[in-house]
Length: 185
Image (cartoon, rainbow, N blue to C red):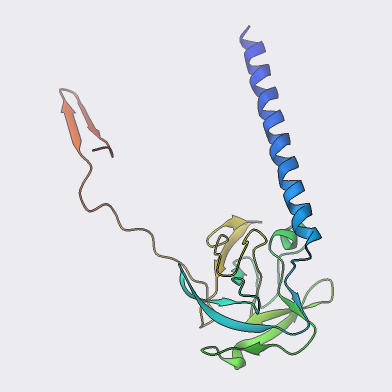
């Protein structure tokens, strides 16, 4: 009888995983159909104030990210990774907006031969699940083996500070032989 319970639980988990996978595939198909990849004949990189502070954005206002796995100015994100984290590619000359240094703007050749825009030698990406200009849903995510961060005006990752601890300590209950600290008032 215990075996049957485990078997039903495993089957339920498999069905749930299948439904989630199907939903993700349908959502990604819709995204791909919109042609919302970060492609441009030329790219203008600008600054925008977000909940993370001032970060780099594409010409359409989408937050730009760096991938911690990239090394020596080369992208480590291709295939499925580039589906969720489209590289900012340009066929024309790119430009830096107010508050940014044009000297930090460049390109790197991707494995597919396309030129990916870089800033301070960091290849730039958008996050496919950021829906509108100024969204920062990709900040701090650990995807495809490393972390993703929005980019500062200096060209480095924006690492948001951890939230401050609560102003008052959690209440403590003491019973003979047992002490408990809990977060509820």
